[in-house]
Length: 442
Image (cartoon, rainbow, N blue to C red; front, side, top):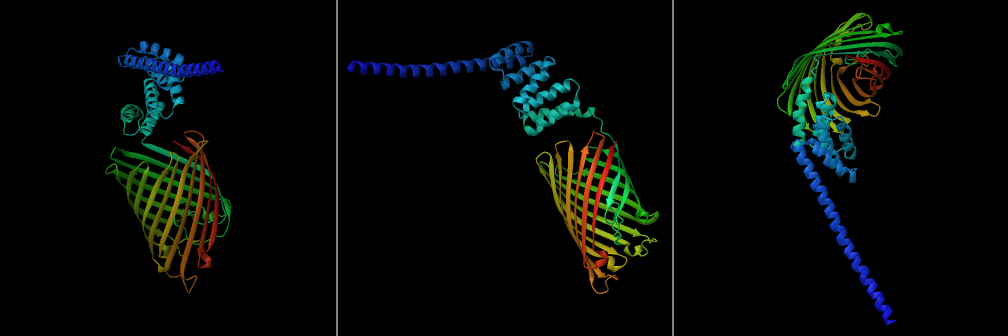
């Protein structure tokens, strides 16, 4: 019994010592492997720095035999292949990117590789990724330097031309070109219409600190039945932007618009709008704007007292833009305006709250959601009421989805709904517009 116990204690002690020895030797062996790996990597990096790319390639290929998915060895092998001008560099660098997409060095090296191949678009994308992943670092500084080599190759286009053609179904046809005040006479009739819209712009000043452009827009609608509501609009504008600093910018707009309805002149308007743009960084910005608009309305067979609305509108507003991730921008704002017309019962004070969301979703589709709520309080008693001053509460919501078919072509589908609640029945209405457009950009 005593001998068995003694044998058992001996075996237990031996096993314990064996385990300790195994752990010590294993740790020593692992440290030896790590040290061998570190020495091999240091040697390879040193070869790259001394431009011995072939030697670095041999060393790194040996490392990858035992560590086939090692990120650093894969990256540096891609670097060595790239520096030596070998096409295998692309695959190796992309393998490193697959292992860790958030590595700014890998993105930077892919940009350098594509720049060397003359593929400036791809190079620019990876340089911009580097800046996003590691702002205010040596990687972003190098990426910015390389971007200066990429961008001059792309001569900025000074002109643009956008053409849209499509159909709309309007549940309550009211004169409206999209940016023109309603005539306040409600047709209460539905109709289909064909719409053609052309916008051209020429940028005659494109400097780092300042930009300026001139533009022209032509709008034409043709109704199936209600031809008296066909709109022809010509709009000329002049825009400018001056960057005071990285935070503050001044923008300005002047426009002249002439609009006809049913072939008869309806109104012309001058608009001046200066604004201050504040860039808070990381995509956040605030726009503070003032708009003065003078509109001269003409009487027509359809709108016999249209000239009573001639006058001016003064508007002040503020809009905040908030980025949500890389593909969504939220906006919210407030506007107050005072409209002064020839006849006091057309004059009003208004307050508007607005909100919107722009998002890019999978499938190369852009979504724009928008909503606003406006209250207008008119100055004098309307002849249509006889006893009370008019008040309107206007709610508008819209959604527009645009599918990019290519860099030039796109297709848009949209829905707009307006509810104008008024204390005067003649101005109380609902309106829904469904749109389908094909767009071309040159």
